[in-house]
Amino acid sequence: LARSETGYSVGLVVSFPLYDGGMREAREERARATLEVRQLKLRQLELESGGQVTAARARLLASLQNYDLSQVELARAEEDWRIAHLRMTVGKAIYVEVLDALLALARARNNQVRALYSARMAEADLVYAIGRY
Image (cartoon, rainbow, N blue to C red; front, side):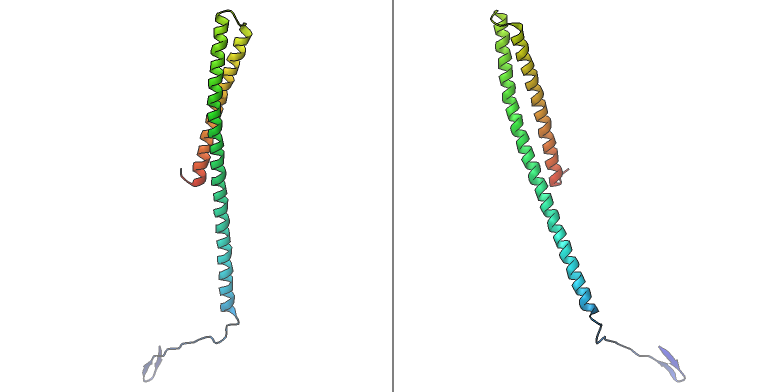
């Protein structure tokens, strides 16, 4: 808007750069490179999280198998203790045999508790890895 002696004059100026020295292409190339880097980082994160889920699932399955084995071990130890106790009651065993069976029973119970704890921790790790809190 300009003022002259006869009034105001209004004009419009439009400019188009004919040559920008390759700046536009450089910006596009930089944007493409940035996109590619971000896509690669995303893929890396996907692979890492998938690996964490797989490892957590494997730990959980192994822990559950250990727990099942600890239940079998506990049942066997309880039966061994029962037999040793009966043998001692009828006078066919010495007290040390009963103590050994009782010690094995205590160890089996301890192993079962540890296996259960390990399974619960593995379950928590899996829940964390898949993103459900």
